[in-house]
Amino acid sequence: MLVWKYEGSGEYTVKSGSLCEEAVCPLCKVELENSEHLLWSCGVLQGVKFSMPKLLGFIRGYEQDLCLVHENLRPFPGSMVKELWRPPDYGIIKLNFDASFIQAKKLATTAVLARDYKGEIVGAETYLFEDVVDAFVAEARGCERALIFTRMMCFRWLVVEGDSLSAIKNIKKKEEDKSVLRPITHHIHQLELLFDEVTNNFVPCAVNDAAHVLAQEGRRRRVCRNWTEGVPDSVRIVVVKDRLVWNQRI
Image (cartoon, rainbow, N blue to C red; front, top):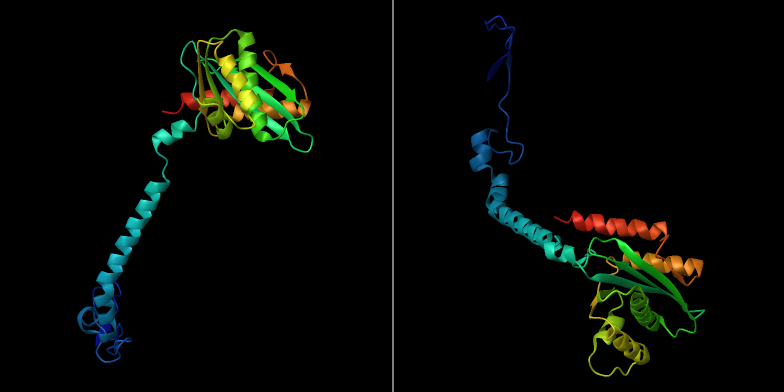
């Protein structure tokens, strides 16, 4: 077969031509290599062609699996809202409490942070307890101090939040508590009668971050203090973040 090289003059000469041998298919090494042979008659490629539907089926199935995993990992709007600190309704004060416990010293530092419907701090307190048995007792003491502190602030409608599920469950029980928390939960129930309405809720640690930071500050400074003025900057930063994230949730 002759192949002519184009030289730009528009004429083909002997000089511009060259002889090219017909190539044999490098796969089957039987027939000549051309597009018709590769598509329809090459024995080596026939196996690939016949397995193509299986390959496409595998790819489609893998794609469906990836889509399913993506859907399962994608957070639902409702679940994201639950992970945010939510301001209370107008006229209600939200109390977030937490406790820091040093087991070796049996020392607990409780913290309560009160915020209004705007997400603004209206009160804060850290309190020290000695001879505390365990972290569960420390958390229950935190809820107890939240009500005592709020009573002094003269608030009437409360939402109380903490990240200790055991403490919240024991406080919300209607029947008599037989656990080690019984004296504390009994006192909490008595304190609740002094308010018009008290709602106790369990929240994830991320929602309770501001109270957690306040408890850490109280532990570091080892002080019983009403932080109505001069709340630590570390706490104020979290409070501002909570408010901004809530306002930008949509």
